[in-house]
Image (cartoon, rainbow, N blue to C red):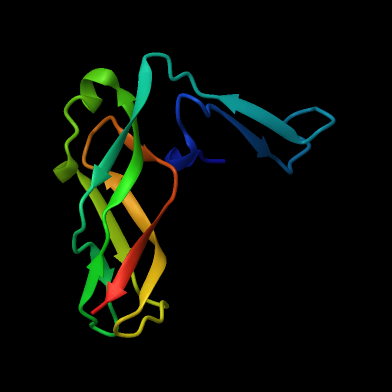
Length: 131
């Protein structure tokens, strides 16, 4: 299995996996737990102001994206100290989303941080208004 970093934080370090091959491991319960050692890691909250961030806009709508707060970034303190708003990206894929001019909708967003050793924890929704 794989560990989704959006689910990995100093407060969430254990993941349960299932396996189907009884010849691999002899146990009764077909599950095992993996613990990730995040000693020395911390998390901090960040906000980003409204921006463009739309990566797929099939109807070519002019849209406004509201800012996003409480973005959780995980990493070593020295690395987190170097994170600024411009290193956090919020991308919105409008394909499959129906939004009419004047309408505001809450849509899923992909939030990433431009850092070699930090990541964004959690999933996020943003409000998009079609102008």
